[in-house]
Image 1 (cartoon, rainbow, N blue to C red):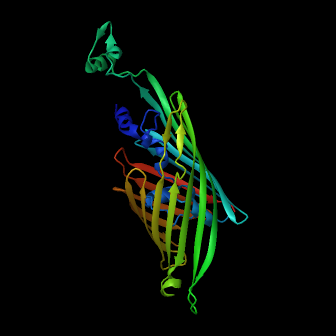
Image 2 (cartoon, rainbow, N blue to C red):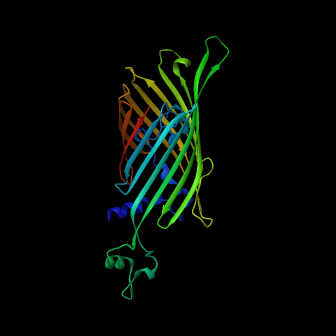
Image 3 (cartoon, one colour):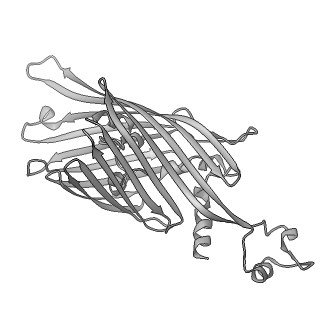
Length: 338
């Protein structure tokens, strides 16, 4: 019964053909990577690893060497499972990445429309909804599953330039990574299936505070933007039945401050997005010697927290996210192969 109640509460998150277009591809709103989730999803300005394809494809341009990554999470008290796997590889001055994202909701009970009296007939008598459910034990007709997946193919490039204001010693070096992703979406629900294709575009701008203000201030200022589903992605179910994913404009800023220690730093970040309604994201991270990290943030009104551990070429991250349908725990890992 608890599972059924959770399912009914989560139905708006499942992209059914009969649903309003608002919910098409909404599994891509869940978030990828434990580090980013622990920071409240505030990543568009400072994403810089193999999982940047999701938060800002431009950040993929910072990848150096072959990286593989993955994440797994049980969502909504075990109602669904969510996973990602991918690889990023620099190629001739650009970085290419391929990532697979999947959401699966198994064993969904199928019940008839109890508002229709014909579905409440038992032994020749038409019962009320309550009487019918009590008499049958609320037994379902059967079970089905909901499976949603997306394949992201990303290209990004890190560009460096110098702004010269024409005065002596007043030149500002800047970094301008840009990137784009093409995504292929598949959705199967019971006996129905749909597919679609879309594109995301993003860019970042980074400048060191020592070049702007004083050499004693060892920090980096970053700004980023993302146009998600810039092509108005649509999931086509056939027979002229399509669910559209409207454009989402996401922008954010971050302060990356060097802290005492050779590889220690603190990151303060902020994002805002507006697809269905305006949502704000806040994140804070402290990394100690590039080995241990603690994080916290807010995803809208829900708080997040997590930690990370980097050993040799591997990085393992954990995130906790408080949600109305149940708290979720996520673990992700990334590995630099070379």
